[in-house]
Length: 164
Image 1: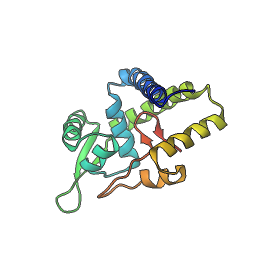
Image 2: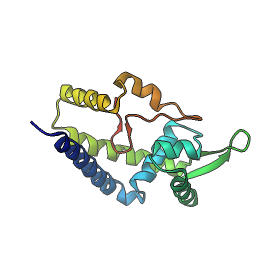
Image 3: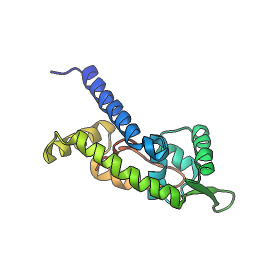
Image 4: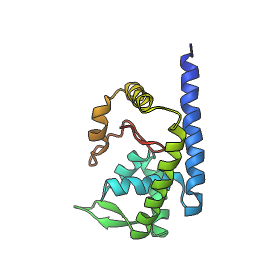
């Protein structure tokens, strides 16, 4: 029987393997995994604030601010005025094109990685991970889609996408 430490290490190894594979898949698009993840979240959460995006991508506000500035300079995203003094972000046509290609590559990479599991096994894995995360799987979708003053991102992995 595997120990808790063994299981934790295996989860980390899978995450690391996916990170490397996704980085390779996105390299010739000229974006990093965290940049692609930002584009993915902006596609899902149009007009998200810097704070929202920082939480969704597991970054600090300061680190995400630096990343967003570079993405604005590259024409991948743009800042737009929101209500009051709020600044929101939107994805540009260039960013959307890169996001779409990247999404296909990440999906293909994920599909290849998980192809050893049957549909039932994949569902079991998703349920087990949701249990570890402490949120029932059916609640994940509603929480992941809430963007506003407080963003809940339980179960939305930047590497694997939503656990649905």
